Length: 284
Image 1 (cartoon, rainbow, N blue to C red):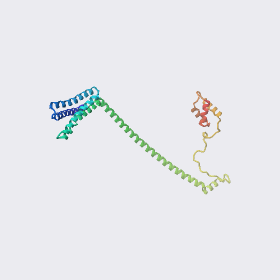
Image 2: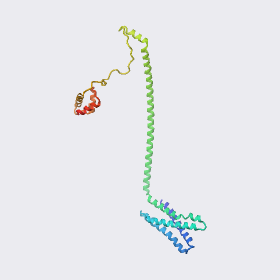
Image 3: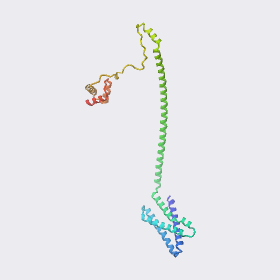
Image 4: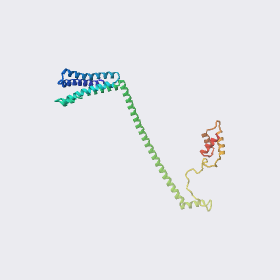
């Protein structure tokens, strides 16, 4: 994996250094002796290469120097400037020289990318751990989605069943109400009929003369009052306190409020919840 970033940077550096040296020798060789031009070219490439080597040494130690980085970029820009100046002053192939003038800066950028890769590189064990965590998260998400879909389908089925059952109950109730209404109408018609009155008079006249009984419609449901619902005389506070205290101490240990209230209602006494609780607080 390291070779994927370092090899392009090395190749681009070599090409840019050779190109810079050749341009300096070709361009300045006409104005000065070629050995001097060669020294100038080697100086530019040497400074560029020296700062790059020092940067790589600092990166291997986990360190970084902005001054060295600035010097390295300066040499790269100088080399690029030389190539651009040569391309602008060339008599022919000006476009070709401009096309390769960016090589020093490109080489520097590739080394920057390689340095970033080194600072963010992880070991195979760490990469395997990250992949396992990501796979586990995907598995949990898939299971959660499946659970939600299953719960939604179950809830839909339950609602459908409840709705169908409710519809059946409503139909039965409607039919029963219709039957009761028909029966009630029949009874009312029979009650108001003249023949029914004469028939009842002929039957009851032998038992009780001059009496025509009134035939009332039957009442559906119980007619007797429930003793627990009959309203009795209201208890005074003193009587209520006495009853509460008596029921509370009917057993040992003393009853709780809930047990006392249940026995109070069972005995047939009547009092509002507010008065009963107030009496409990007074005696307790």
